[in-house]
Image (cartoon, rainbow over all chains, first blue to last red; front, top):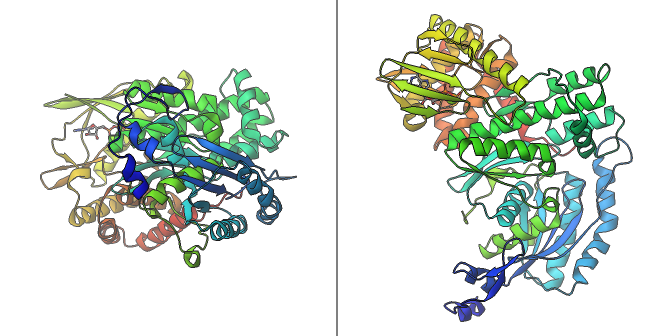
Length: 358
Length: 194
Ligand SMILES: Nc1ncnc2c1ncn2[C@@H]1O[C@H](COP(=O)(O)OP(=O)(O)O)[C@@H](O)[C@H]1O
Ligand SMILES: [Mg+2]
């Protein structure tokens, strides 16, 4: 900390710095902080299919390595995923350490997620923190999706549409925490798409293939559209899509499924904007990479006079950088863990985390 | 004066309001027109049905394809004024509504207006007829979620609501409130397994 004090007040007129997205530009007043805070954190993500580690500072991602678990058949098998993580975590960490970049803390995805996967990652993180004698930081996976999005896009206080495998949530900050305003009452949109992909005989993950097929679709097949307040239900729509697949072209069914499901998601996002009075929307989570969903959110925001933000593509799926970055801001706010109190939290809720930085 | 809700533009006049469901450019026109006209019709029908069941709602003067003309309820949104006492009164209204076989579908504190000491329910576009435990449970869950996400002291507000709901609908209230807990539990213990 004394180290920071030395630089405070030092002006860097006209110097060239790197912005949030790595572009070069002239330094502004606010850049002082970015330049001063040279701390970095090593973060490990491993809540489900993704196993990824990264070293991140305020200015950029310094190193990243990953090895995703791809299920041989069907969906994710928790024990198989944990075994995958256990056998690949050492080489991945070795890779980021080999970058030679130092770090001031070790962060890990503490939950929510699959217990066996979380425990594997936590064990590695504890060992690293002890070996390097740096603080251990437990990160909420959902909060990390939000924070990496805020970091990468520069938005401030958005309504967040978080769309991953199991989750579809509308989240916004209010009084010290990120609150869930609405969510799916049954399946998450990512799992719904992947399941439907398997039904069509597409390779896992189905989402991107469905997106490609949908681009060729032309006629809309009517499907159940179920919005309840800011909550959603996808199960009726999924049954209808499977039925429709027996008699219609793949392209038309994928088109209809996307139009229907995404309109529901955008509608609840708009409801949250109206209810909270905010004027920014941020998208995150694996399904967020879908171009059609992004275009729809952007159109909704334009109609309402709100602004839409999407991070670069590589930050949508679960990744080590989002854990490292969130770990970094937690470290700066003293939100670290004693090893003895660092048990994983498979049902860690977004609104369990107190957010002091917003 | 004009108000913008989640899906409608509401023009306010001293003697009436015109609520128009405006086109959404993010939806394909087919889906967009279907939703706007279906919801306008549902709202017109159920708003009057609810009043017959003893829930204060604005009187509907005219129904158009995508618009309703109705009574102006000059009051304050529940969002700004809610207290445990008012939340108890909301519980009574929702109990009556459910007892009549109706589901509101969008029970947020933005969709209730306090005029004098009378609570009016508005925004029946997502309403439907359903007497099942699940539908009633989800309806109450939506209300609870707004309390949790948007209001301090939500536990007192939820308890007060339950009290009012029990008083108005004693024969089903306990089952519905148990179902609400189940629905919350389902959401909380979702993991990444498909
Ligand atoms: N009958 C009414 N009297 C007074 N204000 C109304 C009336 N109907 C709607 N409003 C106002 O307009 C807002 C939006 O109307 P609402 O019916 O909730 O539409 P939306 O579906 O867009 O949320 C309400 O929150 C309320 O402030
Ligand atoms: Mg409304």
